[in-house]
Image 1 (cartoon, each protein chain N blue to C red):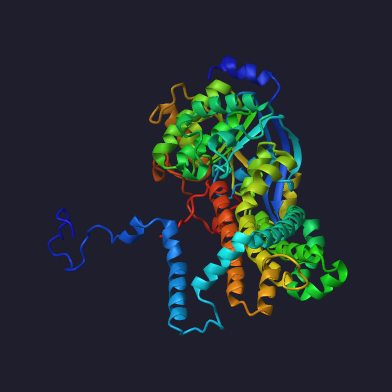
Image 2: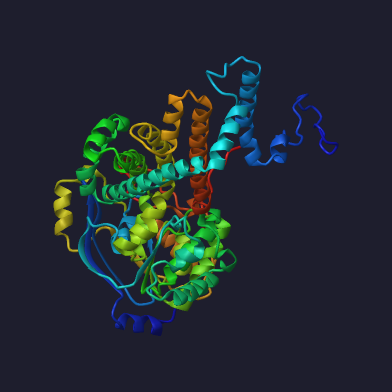
Length: 288
Length: 280
């Protein structure tokens, strides 16, 4: 993305602005004061290991977690795509996509058909969800999310349950859809390559320190101005079309893997990253 | 074993891959016919027992006699009248019982305060044997139609309540979350997610209720009735007409079967979206 586009985005009002989001599960502080702004049309990827709170954070933004605190300035129209398609099995694909649209039925149908065509599922529009393959079901879920013309699209590891081939196709599809509709996007993923292929900006969450550090450290954390949930944030300035093997791609990949605690040689391309186990990690229970 | 399949050298003798063992009789006989084999066999054996004198006609009339009496009752229109009365009672009782069961299950299932309020008394009442309430109901409602319909209603309420409640609480919360993310609102959630999601379980409750309805009706129609299949049977008992009694039983049986078949047909239509185990 060019600098001119970036700066014009920054000047306009952010689509999402959250400050000091905190969420604890009992003694475990999973989100320790997260601040985030997302500009209109910006694609942000949220990377992190299991248990770092990235899914928790997304759920807070989606309004699914009332136990969090902080200031949330969110747009009116938010759509969410989860790791499972979560289609209603008793409704056809078309009915699922059209559900809840604030238009008269004929208009609902037209928009649903268009959205389904966009994700390439027209031939399965009347199918029952349980008869769809994983990739097809996720495409239906994407259609359902985008038909609402959201200002913000939240994606929680949407391609995590898909095979590698389908995942590649879905990356392309998501990029296409995003170019056409231009919502702001927050993509939660553990896949570094996915983040680098799609996002303008990548944020890395850290795994919260083990429970053993509670007490004195908690005091310190609360009084500190900046949160320690976000461990890194970088702008993805890989020129289009982005491709693995490109020098800048590989460089950023190395940086991100470093923040995630993985040496580059350990992680083959597009593999879900594997964090070297330490005694601390073993003690924490994944929050995702 | 077909010619195109050969065992590999060194393979265990006798362990060959051929066509899977076909239940060929299953492939050629339609389902309805298959399911009729059992009942038909029973009737055949019964006729044999009666004709050979193994079973005295005073104990149990032969199927041939039963058929004759049935024909007589049908031609005079007597059977139809009684049948219509019985059906009416079941329909009214079911209507009340199923609606009440559904409504209570919705309140209980959708709201925690509903469950706290309604579930304990319902569970208490459920354990009361419905048929033991007959004298009480007669005392309260007289000897007309009301106690009969009320008994059916009470008997059919609990299976529908229990199963629908379980269906509602069994809905995957992930779907409820998905509904929230498409801004479905409470009414939309209930109509588009909760009710269809609870429907499979509710239909099981309905089938159960149907069985209870006929059972309760049989008993309540034998007490202070002036019409209905049960009355027909009680009357026949006075005159030792075992054939008419059997006609009554057969009618009840057929009614039970056909109403169950109706619900099954409804299930097949309404639950067509399920991809579930359909039997080997």
